[in-house]
Image 1: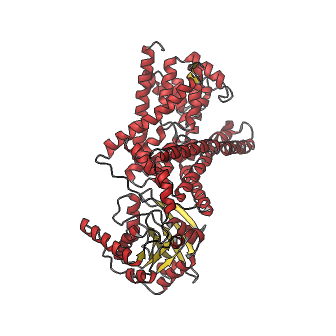
Image 2 (image 1 turned 30 degrees about the vertical axis):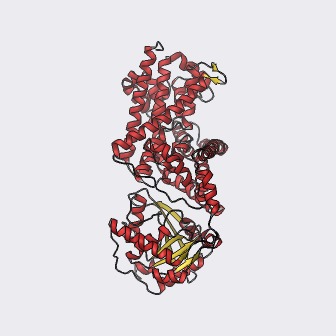
Length: 628
């Protein structure tokens, strides 16, 4: 039996953004979905499977939203190449389903004309048809069907209306033996684009009558939400709620996950006989494998809370408005309007922030956001900041309700924000010169999100995070354990074991490089295991200074650091942590999201350079002011 008979028929869903295409995909395929990346790019690939009422197996591909096959972004290029059968390792689609917002056919008609030129069998799904009927929008379905030369099915994806009929229509089209005609599509000229626009306008005017009950609610709501003052105030209030939720809602489940993984690791480690192979298997399980797994899973609640808001606001139709409001503010620093959500979420953790950059369509805007997201002050820096501020900054009231330590902490957060804006402007000048493309976005109508769709998308995000980040982070954590453990200390050793490890030896060897910024070898040693996660440096400092459990002895550790370090050294350490990429997990996710070790190296390089220069300036200014 040939492969063509064995494989399911392939159906590609194509449409403008915000047409309910993904909701239709979910309604068609249910839980039979798998998510991956297309080969060589970071564009997400969603494929689902279903069996039609006639018994035919279909493989459905949810392609990225696009307004044209001209492909002005990586996402649009994937859609174009998938439709044209150009993707390496991907079979060409047997049927194309053009998904349209029935209330707004103006832009999709131009895309449909391009899809016709490709010559593949096509079905038009008029989605959100219930809204069109409620507005009194009159569409001549028979005339439009004859004009376009393809079947038309009306659907309401969120309520699964028309889904069975769509599957039947696709099945009938395949059963009829419909084959692709000659592909006459090519990159259009400016004149051809204008001609296609006029043709789309003619079709719209001929077969679609204006609504008898226009949607006035959207206009009234937008008058408030898009107001330059009231709109920004509402946006800031929503961001405040989201910001607080990422910290507060995710806190208890994250703590529970961390405690659960630690308990499970201890239980399994306890099954190993004491002293077996010098305790190395137990250390590997507890400190390596389970600590690594815990460091991955602990981010999951933050990611789910973040994406809950993103999915909810996206489905409601608000995210497009928020991006519109923020575009002017962030555009001055070379950032896209949509970058504000990833950067905001990076205050909790850079990992979900970097993942959230997928909401940005243009590759260079997405890359710029990814490269500056780690400059936001993530929660992992807080233990380091708290330790150093408590050790070197007096707990002094400097004004009504103002504490000196609190002001220093606020200054560290502000430094991260301003540095991200400056670096983004430099990145755009260095890597992507030329005029910034205007921010164009079709504002969708407001819709009530489907709970089923929100839940399914949340589960998919959890799956993506665990499968993508976990495979990279876990090996890195084990590697850190190895270099911090071997070689073992010799007989009669009195110094902490880490001094004799590879990490300890490397720390002492490279300490001269850090001498100009006031770092001693103990600080350098702490940076090495701290590469697993920034907060690990606190525990590493506790080990190096033989204070015992760093978490239980933070006060004692702070006192010890105050005795051993100068104020200039402490301030230099703070400056280092504002910029340094001290997080293997973040680097791993950057690699996955950019699909490039080169861009990961660029980010690592510029952040280390900034950290060194900031620490150097801070240390020498402090010494000059008598704080050395």
